[in-house]
Image 1 (cartoon, rainbow, N blue to C red):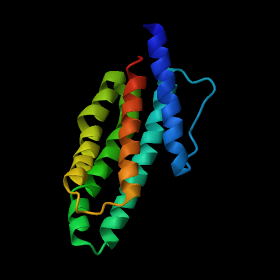
Image 2: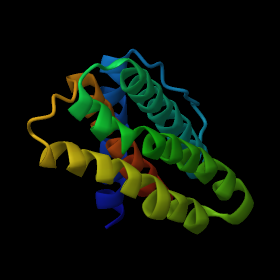
Image 3: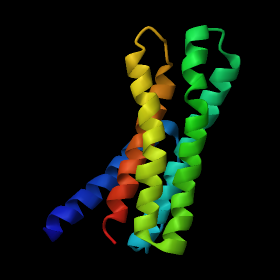
Image 4: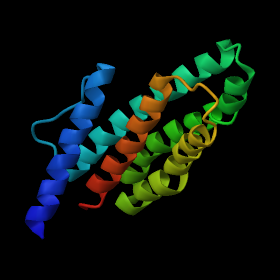
Length: 154
């Protein structure tokens, strides 16, 4: 069982690295990080990716001339802002209240906001959501999964 968890943990870190490479993100790192340090690093990465998603979506929302895309983004830009803030707050929760509180910030608040918009874009196949926005939603969703996996090792 311990080998399985170690393998899953290692796979999560590798996945995080591979996912972030297309976005030219340099991972925060530490050669001596413990589980809490790794959780903090993953939360930092998740916050940064969610901020990029929010910023790109907000810019598109502001500048698009496509009314259907504008309407879809109207339902999402503020959710992406909320997801970013909740991923960031998971770091404070981890320090102040422990891993269970940090998990709750991710599962109850951040992930549903990303999932809602991902589902909305799938339910609206006629709306041309740019690939970079879809990709960034997937990255943030994967970030949340990685954060949760690391937090489950406390």
